[in-house]
Length: 332
Image (cartoon, rainbow, N blue to C red; front, side, top):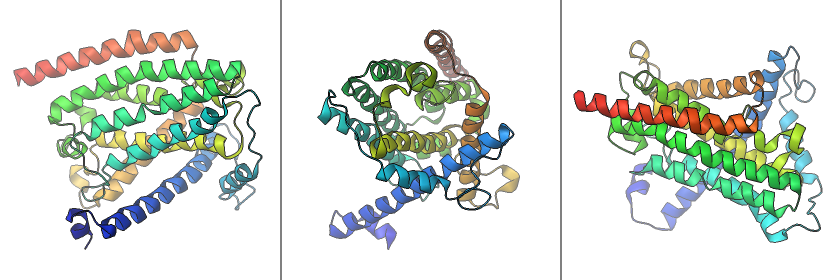
C-alpha cells in the first residue's frame, strides 16, 4: 500500500500520506533534540566529574530538557524597541526551516527516505547554506553591536568553511560517480569511504563542526566576548528556534557523515545478520557522541586562527585530495 502511494499520481491521498509522515518525523526529530540536549549535558557532566541534570525525572534527569522547553515557551517574547521588527521575527524561522528541509534527502536505510533526489548531496549543501541568511538577519535586525559582530562572524565562518566542506566530498562523488546519496552508500558495500578517503573524512568532519557553530568553532556565540552573539536579544520560543536549528543540523550532519563515509546502513562483513537500520543508528550515535566529546574537550579558537585554518590548511588539503583521487582513478 505504501509503495502504491509513493508511485501513484498526485492526489489528496498522497498529500495526506506525505503530510502525516512528515509531521510524525518532525516529532521524532524534535524528540531527538530534546534528549540530545540532555545527553550532551550528561556526557559533559561525566567528563567533567559531575552528575549533570539529576533532579527532574529521576537520577538521569530525563524530564530536565522537557521542563526547560516548557519554560522557554511561557517566557515573555521581547523585541528590542529599535530592532527591525519584521526581520527580527522572521530570522529564527529562516535559520530553522532549512535544517528540517535537508533531512528529507538523507537515506536512513534502502527503504526509509523521504526524497530520493538524483542530486541529493548538492541539495543538502545548497539548502543548508540558507541558514547563514537567518543568522546574519538576526545579527543585523537586533540593532545590537554584539549581535551584529556575532552575525558577521557567523557569516564569515560558515561561508569560509562551506568551501572545504564541499571540496572534501568531491573525492567521494568521484568514487561513486553520482551525487545521489543512495548511490554513494551503494558504492561503499564491502569498503567504506572512511578507508578510501581518510583525508576527506577529517576535512569534512572539521568543516562540519564549524558549520554547526559548535565548540571549538563557536566564535559567533562567544559568551566571553559577545555575551551570546547573534541571538543575544532573543528570548523565549524565538531563541528556542535557534537552538532547535543547531541540534536538528547536528542530527542531519551526523546522518550525512554516516552516509558519505561510514557506509550508511551497510554492516561489517562478519556482522551482516544485524539489520541495516540498527547499523545506521549505531554509526549515527557514534558520530553524535564524538561531536559532544569534541565540545567538552577542546578550547575555543581565536577568530584569526579560525579563518586561517579554513583557508590555509583545510582548503589546500581538500584540493590536494581531489587531485590525488582523480589521479588514482585515472591510473586504475
